[in-house]
Amino acid sequence: MITITDKHNCCGCSACVQTCPKQCISFEEDEQGFRYPLVDKGVCVDCGLCEKVCPVLNAGEPRQPLEVYAAINPNEEIRRESSSGGIFTALAKAVLDEGGVVFGARFNDQWEVVHAYTESKEGLAPFRGSKYVQSRVGETYRQAKAFLQQGRKVMYTGTPCQIAGLKRYLGKEYDQLLTVDVVCHGVPSPLVWRDYLRDITANNLSQIASINFRDKSTGWKNYSVKISGKEGKDYVNESFRQNLFMQVFLKDLCLRPSCTNCAAKSGKSCSDLTIADYWGMEDPNWDDNKGTSLALVHSSQGQQSMDACGVSKKQTSYEEAYRHNPSIERSVAENKYIAPFWSSFSSNGLKGVQPVLDKMKPSLVKRIYRKFRRLL
Image (cartoon, rainbow, N blue to C red):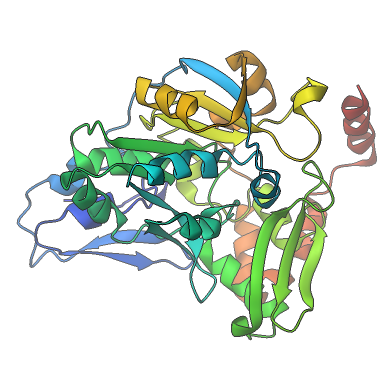
């Protein structure tokens, strides 16, 4: 039976919840907003299936990609609406053209991030763009399995731990399954996200019209966070460097504990493809500041999908890609300011954590050094 004694050992994929034959495992949110399994011992028959599907207890082996590409969607509108080069939409459309189903992360009507599926190209738009909150997988592993058993093609996208959880849950390979994970810095707390939204909207979430974590109006490399209201006003429209939620996220203050020792990075998720932003692209023909995707191919299924999806692609090296995107392999370090952050957040919400952020500001010498390095 799944028993969480150390929260660093649970990634929150929910594979255990969905596989339980007695449905005696619930997913309960803790004081930091992360969900963990809780077993009803009076109903549990101790079959061990929950432990068998856990991607932390059964971590895969590291893999080097077979091929590495820079990629750009030729549709400029799709590319503009995407976080990087628009590769997700190209892959998804190819699956839908074969009568398949695409799973991804979107916002629900409360602006929480949840996993869902679509069978239409019109349904892809909510899946586009990064969502810097841990999504709720819900019943989507079961739904994906049902589609696969019907013989339908399925594309499932998520974080590495979510893909690892899906693969463990399925327990076998399916020729018509395409799994795509994203290079993940770490997953922020849904509780912190809810608090942030309530604060900026004066607790009026129903007036939000759209949320874009990666608005590229100011360029791909200096993207903005844009939250627009139904009455035509912007609740937020500011650089990611200035946005409070993004500061807390990028400084590793509100991430799930398991993100400090991710069990699914380095190809261990067993995905067919890994996609991300191709930061550090040095070829000016492939870097016009509109967004370029990185694609790491791990399987023949992944290569076939890359060849069939219609993106413009350029072969490159893993060393070059990793140099500017170390989160492919590296987990975030345990931040010494995490305890002060949660203490301040518990007392005053996200707006009360500024003193913690101020303590983390680098010295003048470090700022000069970093600017010099960027110039080089």
